[in-house]
Length: 470
Image (tube, rainbow, N blue to C red):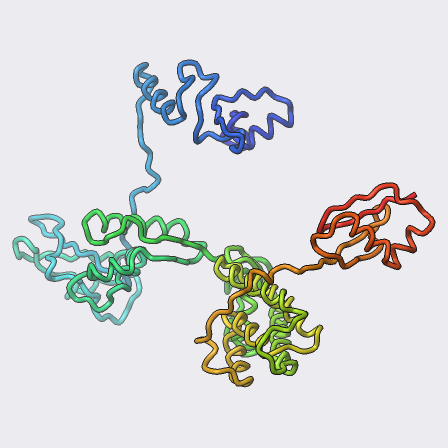
């Protein structure tokens, strides 16, 4: 079990179940889920079977009964394990929130008086750690030397500061009311703004920052300072962009990409476009200079669309359905952080627009709005150049027509004895007889079935037609 290779629970562990099946080992279930939709290895709910005195109990009841049994037999006792451990909350450095504690020879460690808070960092010439490893603050007498809040005798101030986790664990609360000099934030502001709707951060902060900020927030909730138990309604983490060598970017490896250089050589819109197109928002992806050039070429082709624009306040008939499909796809993808597939859809639409050789002003207007979050400088310039009213960033987001999301006809591949010989255009709801008739009228199909007998037809509507001949 310690190796992680096998847990020895073949009925209720996914890896063990697969292992036992492969080698035809006995599998004895101890939980009957009573639900065909649940996987065989499910253990969250169900009734205990093959379990002696636990038979007939629910999973939750069985857990309690097991503990009772162990305690009755003096084999052990119940214990709750917490993953949150003691937090080392001090740093030997200048930067950071001072810890408001004072040491008095008579009273020991004493908290600073509330009216003296916050303690502010003194102006210093050097921020470096001292030779003995102490905080730079320890050498500043006017900061260190103070008086005891209880007896007023000479005392020493704590010179360690709080870690960066301190400020980053609650700053979002202060954002709700940053100019409040009486409290962390007003009740009205906290009631209105919290919890945070959506908190996004780096993948490297997913565990610790989320853990600490929730801990901090729950403490503030317990003492009545915030109105919600949880700090965020939604938390996402973005992936990391690696160097072209597929390693984490670092100066020592020499694989760092300076965004200023990309902006200088290709423009800010190209950088934005590439970073959104490089991959799924949550996934790690390597940098590629060729990919940057590809995005630059794409934006140049968008700029050249201007030359294809003609007057017209309706969508071009040939691409009307594709435009509606693209509006839906891009809108949904932006909302779900799938920027790469949204841009891919816009690229496909661009290709179709260029293929037909002309587009209406409405086609162009919709395209610019959809692309605007990706390349705002380019789209805003084209918007003004073409003479659209107002500013693009103030334009309403386009909506799609549900009735124009599917084509009335489809391109259907036709096989003869398993090999594709032609593609025919038929109604999307065509039956087998209509599909075969259309295929037989195609010249390429006629060549391959001429003088032969069709003895079997395999037809998958909307997918493929296969004619078996002899």
